[in-house]
Structures are given as structure tokens and as C-alpha cells.
Amino acid sequence: MRGVLTALAFSLASAPALAAPWADAGDVRLRQDVELLADYGLLGGPIASWPLPLTQINDAVANIDVATQPPHVAAAVERLRIQLNVSQQRSVYSFELNGTNDPSLVRDFGDTAREDVDATVKVVHELGGTTISYGVGWRSEQHGKNYHFEDTYIARRFGNWAGYVGYVDTWWGPGQESALLMSNSSRPFPKIGLKRLSPDAFNLPVLKWLGPWRFDAFLGRLEKDRGDYENPLLMGMRFSFKPAQAVEIGLSRTMQLCGKDRPCGFGIWRDAIFAFGTKDNTGTLDEPGNQIAGIDMRISGRIGSLAASAYGEVIGEDGDGILFEQLSYTAGGTLSGGTSGGSIWKLGVEYTDTYAFYLAEKPAWETRDRVPGSTYNHFIYRDGYTYRDRPIGMSLDGDSRLFSVTASLTDKKNRRFYGAVRKADINVTDTVRYHISQNNEDMWIGEAGVEWPTRWGDLRVEGRLQTDEPNTPGRSPLKGQLELGLRTRF
Image (cartoon, rainbow, N blue to C red):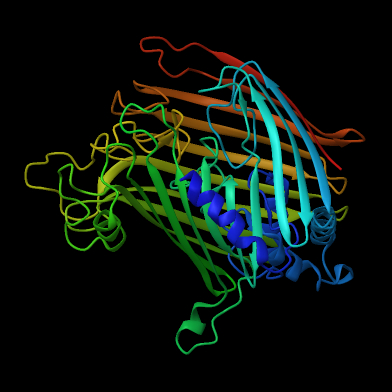
């Protein structure tokens, strides 16, 4: 894998120039502004795949006359323009420090602390069309070594595409609280990838009806110190498109295969990618590995002066003869509006259920409508769909349910006040193979916080209260959490 990554880095060296390629996953305020413009019909193309290319954002905001827009929309445009101006600098330096007495159990789209102390220094350079990002971080008592280099990557643009190699955090899907296939639940793992930048539509007959589209693909390598096979590979592909301004559809697929002492030849890749009949699902060690596919949709638009969205995501574990068989899902919606002073308020509701149910008729021997221990697990890769003991998909892992009600207010000075009430039912089947909790825990979680821009950077203060903890069978300890964060860029 290391040789392949090095080869890509050198092969991209002769490509045309590229500005900073994308907006990173994890910036909740930036995503809120992007979604607001999309809901108002001012930003085209799919927006549910992060990192989001800055080319797509720039193409939209460059042509918006803020004088004709409501105050809160104009404020969102101005914030995005500031973000774009910073990203066009030849060098951008950033520092982030987060501290907490206990990391958040639910990892939503936001970039919160992964351990009690989480510090990162990062530098991004633009060198003649090549973007080089490098940094070093330190987390207390994380899986593996306390230091890391997860902000390091090289990206190079060629035409309307960017190739990259390194660590890139990825979020696929319209969910605000959960993403079922690729989320920021786990730490980013090393990848070699390809991403389409501007989502221009096809000019070909029939295909042009798909509207603006994007494609993302990567091949990553997972960790060595697993309980199944060392360094398995994870391949992901996503095609998203907007047949209408109000409708976005995404098709995603991941494949976990290979690894030390596992077959990894042409036949394995052929059977995994094409997945005809039972070639990819023999029930024996001869099959390629673990596959998950998903489809998601986001519908949005204006209701008078308000912006609204409804969205859903469904993933299916590979079954006997068909790729979609045992399903998990997310469903939710948002409503947002503004004030005459330029503030934006947003309300959201979301429900996720990873306790899989059968798509087709259940097998004759099965007496239950659900499939315990199915989601994210596999008999070959016994450590599951994980990286360094964290689920790559939904942050509460499989056989779990999460219901969330969220609210936020962002004023014209970019001060964001937010809160959430969540009902989490973790590992409802007491499946010991899951990593977040080996037994069922049912709890309420309250959250309130503020992000406040200062002369030193963005200061974040967040308080949380939960009525139980993972892995505490027979008792329900009440736990309060406080998190402080500082992020600065220059």
C-alpha cells in the first residue's frame, strides 16, 4: 500500500494548478451556510459528500448579489466568501486544542475531541497547483500511539478532478447526527483517492437528465493491530447527482477485503466489484470479504421565507444472492429561517436505526423480523467495520438507535449557540462483538454549547449530561461532561 501511495504522489506532479481543493468535513457552521444556499436554490450540485470541493462553493457565491437576498442569506454568503479567501492563500496555518473530562458519546458532523486532550497543529501550502497539507497531533491515551499525523495529505488537480493521497476525513450522506457508511466516528485512515470537483452535468443524451453530479472513490488501508487480519483494505465509491434543484440522490458502496494472510488476487477484486449471484457471498473463507451498499436522498426547498429539507439514508449488508438484504436506515429533516438582523436559526430532527431488518422475505428458519449482530459485522473480519476500535459508520455502532432533536442560532457575527436532546439505545441485542458497548445501554443525552469568535480564534464551550454510560450493566450512572475548544487559522 505504501508503494502505491508514493507512486500516486509522483504521478500527479505534472498536473495543472489547483487552489485549496475542498472544505473539510467537521465544520458545522460552514455546512449550515452551504445547505442554506442550496435550499434557496443558490448553490447547485450535490452537497452531501464531504469534503466538499471549494470550486463548487465558489461557482455559486461568486455570482450572488447579496443586496437582493434576505439578511441571513447575505450573511451566509459573506461568511463563505471569507472562507474562500482564506483558502486561496498560498499558506494557511491552523491550531486546534480541545479538552474534556470525557469525549462525546455521539459523534455528529462536528469536530469534537476524540480523547480527553486533543491538540493539532496543521499547515497547508499551495505549490504550483499541488496542495500539501501536513501537521502533527497529540491525543491522550488514544488507541495506538498518542501522537498522530492525520492532517497530512497531498492533492493534485487535473482538469475537473483531484487525486489525493494521505489522511482525509470523510462524511457521506445527508444526516446531521449520523452517517451510516462513512462518518467521522473513527479517526481518518490513510487513503489514495479521486474526487470530481465542479459538478457539471453530462452533455450526453439521457445522462444529462441526471443533472449536476459528483463522483468520489478511494482505497484505504486499515490498522495492523486488529483481532482478525492485519491491514485489510477498504474501498469506497460514491456517485451523487441532482436531477432537480430540490432533489439530491447518492449511491454509495464500500468493500472490506484483503489483509495479511487473506487472498487479494484478481479474482477476489472481480467478485467483490461485480458481485454477481453469490460470488461475493459464499459463506466460506473463499469469499472476498465484507460489503455494504447504500442509497440516500435529500429533498429541500423554500416554504415561504423558510428553508426546509427532508432526507433519508438506507444501507444494506450483503446477503445471499443480492447486495441489499439486511437494512439499516436514517431519516430526518431540518427547518431554518432568519431574522432582520442577519441571524440564522435552524431546527432539526433525526432518527437512526442500525438494528437490521430483512428487505426480502426472511429465511424459513428465521423466527425474528430483525437480524441481531448483522450491521457492520462479518464472519471473516471479526473486528467488524472499524478502524482502531471505532465504527467507521454510525458512531454508536450496530444494533443501536438514536433519536435527536437539535437547535442552533448563528448571529451575523458568526457566534453560534446550539443545543440537542438525544435518546440513545445502544446495542439493543447485547452483541458482545460491538465496540461502543458490549451490552445494551439506554440513555438520554442533553447538550448545550456556544462557538464564539475572538481575536485569538474560535472559542467553543460545550456541556453535556447523560443518564447512563456504555458497559455499565445493572446500573445507570449520571454523568456530566464539559468540553472546551479553541481553533485558530491564519
